[in-house]
Length: 168
Image (cartoon, rainbow, N blue to C red; front, side, top):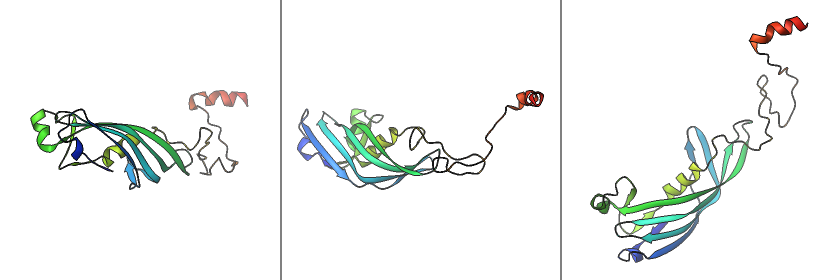
């Protein structure tokens, strides 16, 4: 996902649109593995400013991962927003953009790392295959979405266990 900005080089205010759809490598974040199913799409525009290039757009992908409750694989549709500032490495220092801008060399901006970041940011904190997912049995480990087990799941607060004895 590379954008050739040669046309925008000396034309502040000019825009260039982009529309990418390409395969991306699998990623791992905090021990969770994510595999992109099909192409990752990124659409938007690049606007030339005085010393930098502003990239705005939308990213979309289908990610295959595992459910935090039942550990089964499932596909998740993710849509993110892309809003970044790019500047040539030598212009970052001159324009004092070091804290905001992403540096690049030549006349090509590679937006792939920021596309994957924009999708990762949009992932929910807890990845669940469906709101009805029952997860795994805490005693025998069977998937409660597929089978019902005969385990006793009655948990009693130890502070109230004395009351249970009185009832018997």
